[in-house]
Image (cartoon, rainbow, N blue to C red; front, top):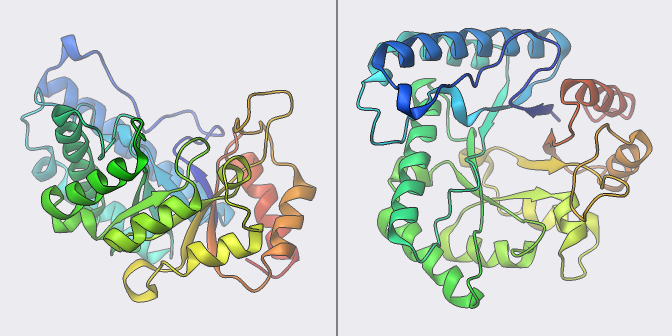
Length: 297
């Protein structure tokens, strides 16, 4: 089992998602910002390797405005060697990588422009993983989208966009995650039947929206959608409910007994766990220690 956290390392004095205002876009500013972002990403990866955190989610903001029409610069060629070196470091240290496009990526939107923008963003993020030379166990993670008053039609629309509009390079990496409001594990299983996409399982979302599946059974159902040679083992997101907050809000720090109990409940199931917990690497280090004590990591 690999354990990790998303995007931001709070122990370091840098960020890999520096940006600037669209109105001040220039190629010079783009190049300078991407250089800083990739340099910080290298530092984050080195920190993670040093501390045994071998699962990491890259920020969507590595290349500002990468999928926006204003950005016509060939940043892929300019930073080709930097991405290649980052990918070599990831592979040499047996890390696993994912990306999670922002909420505006909605493949089943009835708005054609929204779908077009969503595909452009997926192409950008997939190209980052391609430039790094990572195989298809490095994944792009999205939600099912909206129901728009007719979930059956929305699911069908998702499938149509998937099969007719997405490039093969994106489809090879794409996963769908059960969410906390609309698309349950069962809905995602239906999308898997339509598309073949594996399901990234989120335990907190499952607690919010489910069809009665016990947690271990739900993990097993999601894991069965992953083809080991193509996809690797199950990726899942883990968090717990923030006390006194709205349903589905992530906790500030890991609740160690709950995580321990989850590991016991899923004993024998192979997975890589992304901690969606607000204090990032601090909780990830505690989770890793717990998993190691149980022989899971």
